[in-house]
Length: 239
Image (tube, rainbow, N blue to C red):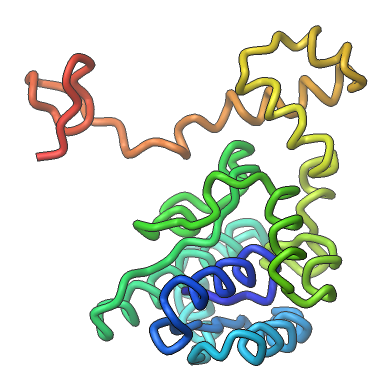
């Protein structure tokens, strides 16, 4: 599993160590040259608390090599996507070398808001926290004893210097999670607003939810037969 020093990967490390035993879990730290020094320090706290094995792979050369070969210099957002995909390449290659299974660390809030790099954060075949909202991740992390310095710091993908999740969203996780909860239960926007949220907040969250369906699906296939993989509406197949 990738260990970033954030609360999501810290929680997965604690859960994996408890479920499988620390000797069966390997954390891969994958810093880029602009990564926050706190990320490595906080990852060390998780390693010390869980006893899991750790390896460090600096992805700077790989990211910079690809970025330098592109026709134009990537924007900070594009460079962040390259970093995320380079980390997933690293994670899958290490898993192949060890005969191991990659574990995902993305939470439900990120997935519903589309706040992840497609074919990167969402790629691992097993995700222990994929059905937990971010606020639930924080609660469970506190319950399991994840160091408070990790749980209490502002959530950040650490792909762009100074970046935080909530600044990117324009809304707090506390509000977004509740709005997402009611949307998933079928409440209409005006009904959710009546629960104490502004129309702008509901519109923001609903807009992100409805505009990112494509990131939560496998690539769409042009269906030419009744056995198109995952597409036939009466009997989806994967063989």
